[in-house]
Image 1 (cartoon, rainbow, N blue to C red):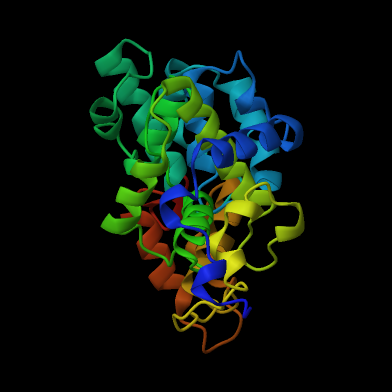
Image 2: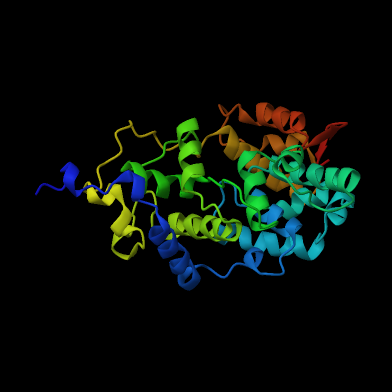
Length: 303
């Protein structure tokens, strides 16, 4: 029978029944990475920090920076009182340094509005600076052990492959994907937390975007995408964004220089790649506008 015959594709209604969910949870118990923010005694604050740092940044880069942050600022109060320049230096090369500013703003809001404790509830979390739908759900599940629809790219990929037989969830978290993630989330709270942890790890380690390891996947017997023969994504693939020569690259160069100490404008101008490179003034202006740099009498420094 052809691999794409409808008869070979599992019934979507039963794809993620109890046995499929249990298979993923059992797999995670054996194969899940031992990460410090997953420890039983990890604070809600440490988990919130990890979630912000892990946005668009791999674990291997986050781990040393997270450990340093927890050593220096183990409580929201500690980060709230820290000099912003030190916060940006500690962020180092994690990228997207506005996240560091948002984290400090978040810490200050937690201290001023919640007595220094990460608040409970999705609405209270989303009211904090820099906390969106995903982070609020992740903190609810992983820090407060509550039932929440956690849907990062990894989880979305696993669910759409398994249930819909689609190769990729795309770049946008759609309303239909939200409904699907809600439908497959276990009703029992503790089990929902374990599922969120497990399926996220499965997407990160096994059901990856480019090289999925279907031969060792606990969801293989339940997966519509595998049953269809792993069809390619029907969407036109987006081109990888170049980094060399971009404003983002130049912003990173300027920030790296400022982490070493204040610099004159003339020194920063030397960062351009050639005479035609006009990125420095534009990128410097954008860093000032973002609150990441301050200019005083021709000298540029961290805020």
